[in-house]
Length: 213
Image (cartoon, rainbow, N blue to C red; front, side):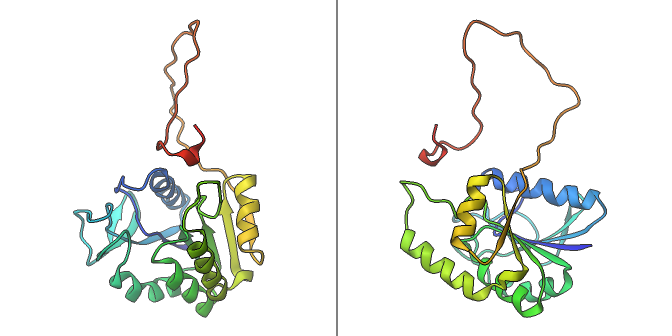
């Protein structure tokens, strides 16, 4: 199976949190299963920064072919990606799109509809709302544009929890949502320490009010 993964950013950047590690692990896992995996992304490493990687041809990253298109500004605005996304979508049997409010979203949705390609779309929690959500009106208008560009019957929303699935379907009622948890690599041996008379808590993630710490 030929799988295209379209993402605004990709490993080895560390500027965008856990979704980078998750998508990198997913692509490696699919390649290990024998799938032909290609990634179309940008060389972004945060606002104002670019990865020091070739951006004029595909490079092999742990068995996955990755095309890092040159980012011009902001997080993922790339004319090279816009120029190439059509031919990449045409090559694929299935397309996996990461993120919602990013530059690659509109062209990927449009080409998948034009070429009638099945699309798995991972919002990564961006469709969920909370009391501190910002730019709600702008996000609503963006979602309306996505609705017009997408072939809803060929799109499956990939979510990681029941709450995310429900909120994502509420934003895009014509699309089906499935729940697939993020995978983790478990080491063969785990080092343990003896319990003590105190509560010990480990938190892994960015410090942000949305995390509910």
